[in-house]
Image 1 (tube, rainbow, N blue to C red):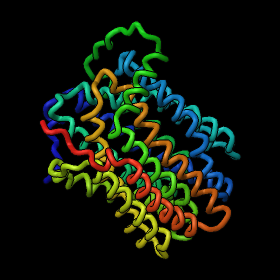
Image 2: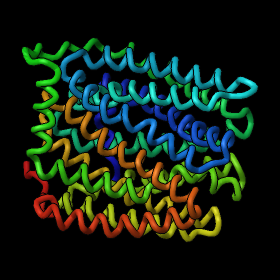
Image 3: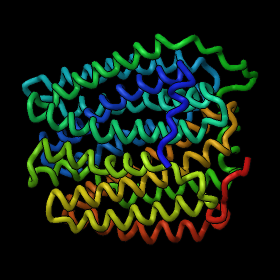
Length: 403
C-alpha cells in the first residue's frame, strides 16, 4: 500500500543522484516562487507573470528535443555536471539583479530564458540516467520515488521561499537556490563514473528523427502527451498565485498557494501502493485529468485561503495520479537506448502545458478577473479532456503489460 523505498537501499549511485536532486529541486522550488513574485511586485500585472511561461516555452521545445538527443550520445553524468554548474551561475545572476536598487525586468526574462535552455539538457539526462542505475523490476518504484521527491520539494520549497522572501526579500530565495545547486553538484561528483554511451554513426538530427518517429508510433505515448497538455493549457493557475496572495497575506500566503497542489501530490504518492492493481492505465490518466479540471473549477470559486488550499490539494492529488500512470506507461514503452530522446519529448509535454497555461491564465485575468480566469479554464479543460479521450480510443483501452 505504501511507497517502495528499496531502490534507495540497493543502489548507491541512484541514492546519491536521488538525494542530490532532491536538495536541488528544493532550491528550484524556492526560486519557482521568487521569480513570479518578484515580477508581480515590480509590475503589478498578471500578464507579465503569465509572460514568463511564453519566455520559457521556446527553449523547452527546442532544447528539450536537442537535450534528449545528446542525453543518448554523451556521458549523462558529465552532462548533468555541466548543466548544474551553468544553472548555479544563472541563479547567482538573478540574485545579483535582485540586490540592485532597481532590479531589471528584462534581465529577469533573459536569465530565465537561458536557464530554461540549460534545463532542456539537464532533465532528459537525469531521467535517462535514473533508468540506467536500477534494474528493470524497480522501474515502478523509482517512478513513485521520483514523484515523492517532486511532491516533497514542491511542498517544502515554496513554504521556505515564502518565509525567505518575507524575511530577506527575493535575493534571499535566490541565495538558497544557489547553495542547493552546490549540494547537487557534490552528490554528482561522488557518483561512480558512468560509461559513455555506444558511439552512433548517425547525425544528431537523424537520432532526433528516430526518437520522434518512435514516439508518434505509440498510441499510448501520444495519449499521455496530449491529455497532459490539454489539462495544463486550460487549467493551470500558478501565474495567478501572487495576485491571489496579495489579498490573503502576501509572501507567506504565496508560499502556501505554491505548496498547495504538492500537498495533495505527496498524499497520493505516499499511498501509491494500489497503482499496480490498476489494469487500464489509459483510463486512469483520463479520469485523473478530468478530476483535476473539476477541482480547478472549485479553486476559481474559493473565497478564502483555506478553501483555495483544499481545492489545490485535491487538484494536486489528481495531477499526481495522472503522473504516476503516465510514468508507468513511459517506462513500459521506452527502451533505454531511446530514453534520452523520449525523455526530452516527455519534458516538452509536461512543461509546455503549464507554461502555456500560465500565459493563458495571466492574459484572461488581466482582461477580466482572477476567478473568471480560473473557473472558465477549468470548465474548458473538462470538456477538452473528454473530447481528447474520445479522439484516442486506443489510449483509453491501453492496459498494463503483464510480466
